[in-house]
Amino acid sequence: MAVDIAAKKAFNNQIAEQKKLVNEMEKDVSMYKKAFSQEKKLKAFFQLSMASKYLQQINLYLDMNDLSEKLMNFKNSSYLDNARKLISKIFSELEQVVTMGIDEPLNHNKEQLMKIKPFNPKQRLNLFLHIKKSIDRLIKSYGENTKWKWSFPEINGKLAIIAKNFMDYRELQKIRDPNEQFYYDRQELLKIIKESLFEASNQYRDKFELSTKSVNDLLYAIRLLEDLRRISSLTGDPDLVKKSKSGIESYQTRLESIEKEKEKKKKKK
Image 1 (tube, rainbow, N blue to C red):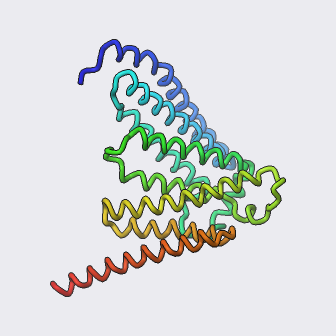
Image 2: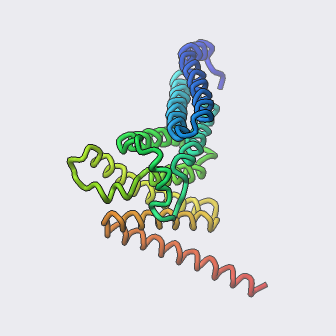
Image 3: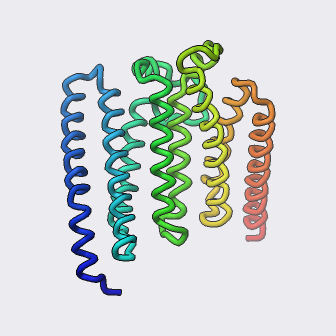
């Protein structure tokens, strides 16, 4: 369907400032990259700043897509794809800050966490909430029939792991006073981490069942639940420990069934 010329002109006029802001943030990112090459000890903080700039760019691209749909009734896949690529950039930076370690001891990245101690629990919670909100918004903007549908479990899985690795579990165990400044921020982040791990595991299971049939997806679903079980055990959440174990056992039974089917087919040959 042809786009109305007047609507297109109005659209271009309205997004001019947003495009300018995207370019300015790109310059900021370049500045941070140069800075951390010179100040190695502050690299993690520059990477956190870069992630923040990427988040702002993502939401500008999503705003531009919203405007395109509103004024021209046209979903702009270019803006959505730019936003999706920036989410990958965020994970790339944050992986270097706290690692993307999964199904490991919860203190596996204690050295990395010590380096970002000034980045307090409230800031960590806010960062995670903003990333999650942007991802949810991106997925909604793409719509149900997008070709990227089965890439979303991977995005949500990475988000859950990143959030998990930003939590200092030794600090969580040590500080139990509700009057402590960041007590409730830690508890809120812990709650969201648990929910995110469980959700991401379910999404990998659905990806296996409804799309790929790849055992790797089911294996990753198990690893996410292993992390959830470990965290739930550490934080005294017996119901969630039981739920995690049940899911792990169910997936393992499914994998064993698949393996038996493969063996039967081999014997028939």
